[in-house]
Length: 409
Image (cartoon, rainbow, N blue to C red):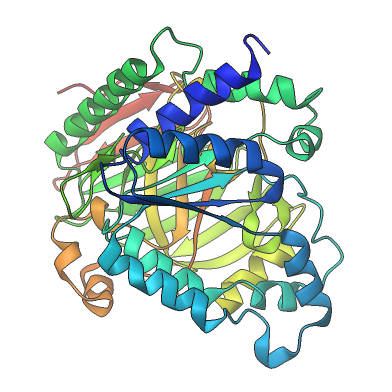
């Protein structure tokens, strides 16, 4: 590690609190973590109090409990969340806490060998629905950040947790002289890139490369977003740290073609690493899926979760990515989605489609914004995959070439 652990944690927590969720004086803060991430959770909690938080709570989840439930819980209670937990989340609609979720699975093989159907059913869909309803409409300031653990480091072939912290420091710009200033400059760059894309008002976006030829239609309401967003109370926050993407919510009905993933990904709700996933998509619906690893888990999610076969996000990431420069496959979606351009099946975010915040879920679907109880990003970009923007008149403009963003105003 290039600097003392305590100092690194302090810089990390300051970035999460001051930029990630932008905690306001008198605001409540809720932190979700695993027991192995206690050091990072405590550092974030202390920093939140330093900037004036009124109350900070930490909720520790234990994946071993989920495994035990899959193995032994009665069918009628599998995946059901206790009412008092749901009530706490519903109360956030009024209390509006800043929500920090720590990512980075220390036990990525824990769910191997379980019945995939029961594993899929063990996901707390009722809780996910409550939380997604708040964060996808930006009622809360929220962020997801990685917190290295020994198990996470071992699972991705890094020598020890110290080396993983070094990589996370690069990805989060903690190695810069002033990380907060570096992040604000980075957010400005992504916003400028989104503004260029919005200025072109493309009707479609096309990804072409080895194993991939996918055209995705955009709605007239679709709007590219990059870096930060603003919640209901006018507070600017950064939902993902790190983030290297500009993204848009497409019209879910207008996707056709096929894609092959260019990087493996960890399907967290199923506890499964997925490799070499290939999808066929017709008239907005994923009609076929194969993979060299994890195919059964993907199919189980498609079967269980309504509207998971439709796309909710299109994103562009180029070679400037600080995450990509670390050269690691993190087996964590937060990081791996920032290695290259990607799409996501499932939930489409209201921030990526103008005017959708005022619509009901059913109206959003009717307008082309997919709504689902999952959101799974898969990387399909590489230097060999070219992205084009297509105008309504059929004219084509290069967006990326050789993994470089080349689009101009």
